[in-house]
Length: 97
Image 1 (cartoon, rainbow, N blue to C red):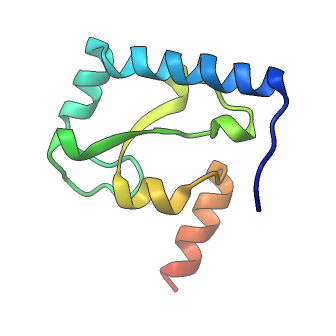
Image 2 (cartoon, helix red, strand yellow):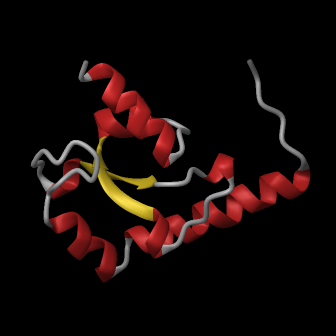
């Protein structure tokens, strides 16, 4: 299913993606990622293998702010997709059964 966004929504996403790019180049993000720990699965990775995940996804109203981004592995980032934190926790509990 294709998603269609209004011009104002497109400008919001562009602005937030630009802010995320700036955050990724900041010392704050480099230090956070340098720990090498995925926020979700808690496994260790090389820092360059971690991606930036929006805890509350942009498509669900989140922002590219320090309190809303965490380092995570590509597998968790792909699985989490656009889930909210409580939806992700339910998903993780379901697959551990």
